[in-house]
Length: 197
Image (cartoon, rainbow, N blue to C red; front, side, top):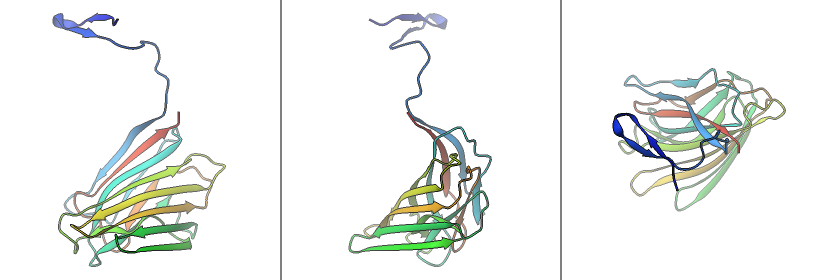
């Protein structure tokens, strides 16, 4: 049986469930969205990130403008340009697989050779989902995991990547850079805060 609620103008609304406080059971909250305009952008940044969530997630669709067919999507946390990043990447293209690892670099990676360039198939964008774990925990170095990929009508690439920022500082800003040029129009980055159950 559901309660009947009277609305304005004679509208009747059926209400289901419980009317008490809602318990947080784990959820994502949109924080910031950046969409690149017609002039392109050499970098984009999320700033003033609050420390009130457990994890962060970045979702993006991207394309860049260098002559190469694919590029790296690099990041820095809190403007740290020291050699404090490392990453491991496993990629497949349907016929072969490769793995790459690098330590002590001055950028982390949200994607390696998955950012589709303007010289590639028209209108194709990569898609990346990036989880930044325990971003506000000051007792841990920061771990990033990425699932990325693109398809160019029969060829393409998929990637699983992990990156590490060797710092226990809480993350308050994220700068993202294309390794060989600039992000093109309609590239979009969305930042979410994730609360644990």
